[in-house]
Image 1 (cartoon, rainbow, N blue to C red):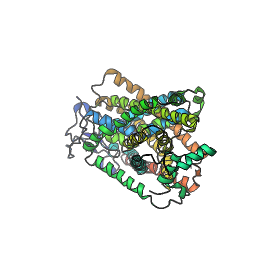
Image 2 (spheres, rainbow, N blue to C red; image 1 turned 180 degrees about the horizontal axis):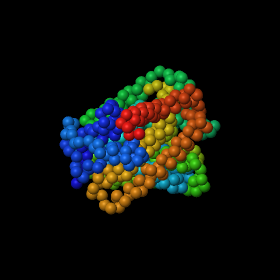
Image 3 (tube, one colour; image 1 turned 30 degrees about the horizontal axis):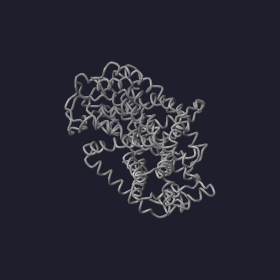
Image 4 (cartoon, one colour; image 1 turned 45 degrees about the vertical axis):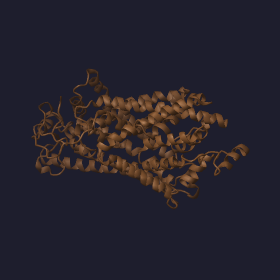
Length: 561
């Protein structure tokens, strides 16, 4: 068995160049000494000097830091490997698997969409997923501390924390909506159904004059969001106390889940990560018995091969892989830091990433079988009832569930599933859409692009692969051979694809104004969203520039240049 290194060299020390430029720190795992077979590990400073010639490289190699007993307590680890796997599956399998992937699949050529989706999985998703898990497991540290192996990249960790902070602000709003719908689901009839006295007249209007304003849309816009009384970002309106209480409850439940760290969250995931699969299976079985379900599934899977010629299809596939796996937020890195050092990180990457993407495809059958029944009952094409995002989860699907016998039971089951996937004001939806569209788009892509380039060229891709080999000592030969494929991705393929995604995002932001329904965001609103996304990358770029300047000054004073 290999043992974790006691020290990661901090590269060129940015604090005081006069101290010799090298500094080590004890392992977060509390090990006392460096294993002999790991003496070559992260003690090398390949982050900045790898391109400066053999003399400089030899000079810095000779300054290897001595072992220093660690004063830190031993870092706790997961209670079992299934806790880590389920935590990562619960982290990755989220609302996007239910409300975004099926819609993208039907919009981008049905079954043909699986081709670009699979390609993007293998050339962007898996390499970045393995990189983040390996960083966390090897360093046994969080998103900021882990970059002591290469301090010039510390800004990446800062950017990860900023993105996660922004996302946590709006993601809990989704959980609050779910709470609200879950509470309303205990009524019979459901308040968004045609049997409800509140919206009975809308169903009459549909049959008499062809109005398309359904009860579920009215309930969503009037009772939940109240956007009928808000004109946009500049007019948020008074607080919606029902939603505010639901949001408070969401934060409180998350607090309870995280109260004792991985000892509490590791037990919670046994339910939250497995319950959605149970509900999806039940919905698939129920949907298969309904009239019109086969039309919905056919609509979902029918391949349109000509769509593969569109750049939009490839961008949608890449972005879905990217956001579904949760890369770049620092969550994977943090969870992996609690693994044992010799955990097989390559195996976990394959199981979690491929399992997550399979769940997305699997969930599409549950969604479109019931939407097919809804379209059959209303006598309209399936395309008219298909939607994405909140429109699917809180409008189209609740309306479809209201048409089923035992609608109360199915509604409770569905929104309980959304809550486990997800664990205010009248105009809050406008701010939600703004943050969702900008803070986690180009900012997240830039962060992961720098992470990929930094590890491959500053820290050293060969050294990084050697670190992974040292961790997966029990890995079969085929496992380590995969590293050649990952190395090619980290050095060339993945950065190129990330640049393509980034270019397309900026192009779309420039040509297509942001909208929510019929509301078009003003210029100042879009500028604010861009600033939120830029904030996540500005801190990282600023730290990189500072670190590079300090490094250049140290090399100049030491006569290394």
